[in-house]
Image (tube, rainbow, N blue to C red; front, side, top):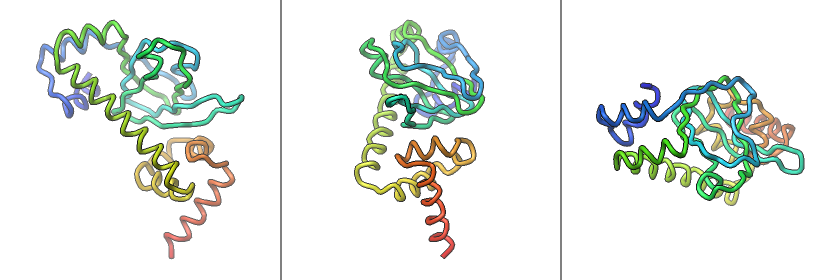
Length: 193
């Protein structure tokens, strides 16, 4: 449980009673590499906290999956629109590596929110973090070239190049795997100069 409580304590310090409520509310679940955690069309009833591994958010676009985001340790994951409005989700989540998640169901979350205002603060922080992430991603696609997005990704999340298959990174950047190879070669050459 420390792998869940410690990151939460960086946002909102929990007292022993609140930690106990959290322990009772969560269930730990493991997923194997490539296993789908949540599929498009389902209605989200759970919130996930990633403690080990890497998860990819993707959309099915005319039979092709398009990677929108990568989650790593310490991040909350939720199909927000589906969870909030009870509609079928448009997105899917897949474990890229062997992954461990803590899962909070909607009833468990509602119970926590009633138990302590700190959980309300935590929920707000998780939503704000997700919103800021999406705003940065959107701004990146509007204001930057594919090469600039690659350099930014390399500089801010470079460790993912060792963890994530290249075709997913290419999809995330909005380019083909061949274009990604050319961009990588150009950037590498520039950095050597």
